[in-house]
Length: 122
Image (cartoon, rainbow, N blue to C red; front, top):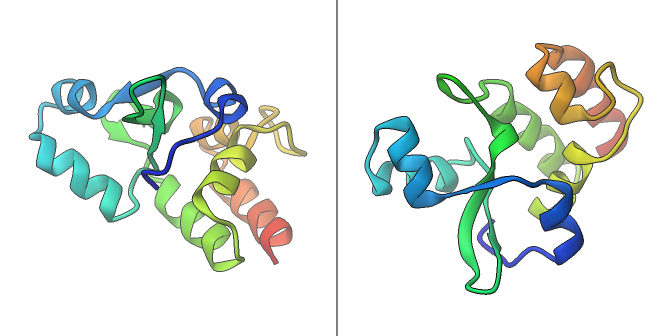
């Protein structure tokens, strides 16, 4: 997704990391960051007044993108959610340990989140 996100979603998923900052943080080229977004390893949106492309910082750990994200994105998209709905779902309170699906993924509870994603999306 490189569509502009609404202010509520921008605030819900904050803080965000811009593509150039993400490239620097991961030590990779801008084109490689764009490929991560195109390949749906990461979801991005356009934020702020200048509508810059950015990724929620919560999608990253010390090593890079959370490994559990891509499959979770796929489950939700296959269930009919668009990227904005996926972002909103990941950052909204839910019946998972950690309070939100993204917090549960950060805590290593991929199976729990995917089960909830299947129930929600289907």
